[in-house]
Amino acid sequence: MSDKSTSAAASATRAKMVIERTYRARAKELWGLWTTKQGFESWWGPEGFRVEVHALEACVNGALHYDMIADTPAMIEVMKQMGRPSSHKTHGRFSEIRPHERLAITHVIDFLPGVVPYESTIVAEFFPSGDSVRMVVTLDPMHNEEFTKMSTMGFTSQLTKLDKLFGSEKR
Amino acid sequence: MTMLSHTFQTLADPTRRGIVEVLRKGERQVNDIVEQVGIHQSGVSRHLRILHEAGFVTIRPDGQRRLYSLRPEPFRELENWLAQYRGLWEARLDRFGAALEEQRKCRKTPDKEQHS
Image 1 (cartoon, rainbow over the protein chains, first blue to last red):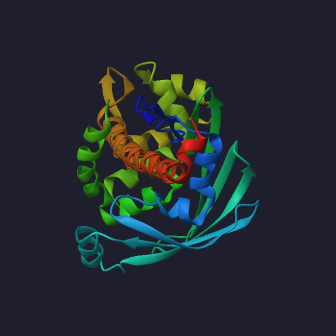
Image 2: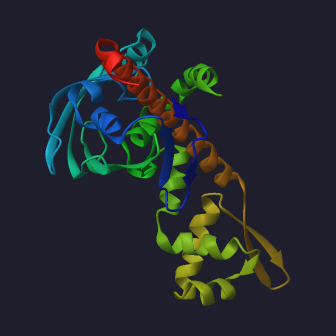
């Protein structure tokens, strides 16, 4: 379904990363995966985690509250070894909403001991073309949940698990 | 602080990023860098010292002059990290695509006769 010729661009100094995918679907369908509880829970979260949404209000400044839960024995063990709980509450808001066109989610990264809370924004844009939609996700790796996690928890070790996934979907 | 965090922290300063940009064009002495970065020599020297200590810059004596140039190692480290980070998000978007497909299947099943 998706075009795997994903393009990504990053500048080490500006540290903005752009990841693109093209899906054979309508923008409305993609939109639903970002803006509904069921949709969001079906894909969000790093490998080895699932999310349980408690509040999702897809309007400007609407709440996005969910638990990030380690859901594989390996990840639960990693968290245990790190002295961290296997789940943590995550708070954010929809900082921008243009239905079926563009949205921004701003997370408050306030759950890591010893890390000064900060905000991290992810932007998703949708560009329909024929029977497909190009989705462009813009991230700031330097101020991002994953960056903090990887820096503080050795999260990159999980990446090795992804090889199989990449291999299975490449065309 | 991890080595990678130190790398990011070193590059977080805009003046140091400016110096890196100048050195991308090749080996330079302090005066050349001062001219292009536009701050006082003492400031440039301080930032060069930080860049050197962080492994970004190497120094080559040439008579009375000291020539500064970039070392590739920390940039490779950054590149590797960014590739890993990109991998995380690519995996997430793989799941997005799978969820999308699943969603479509569920919607098509009850009324597939009505849609082409």
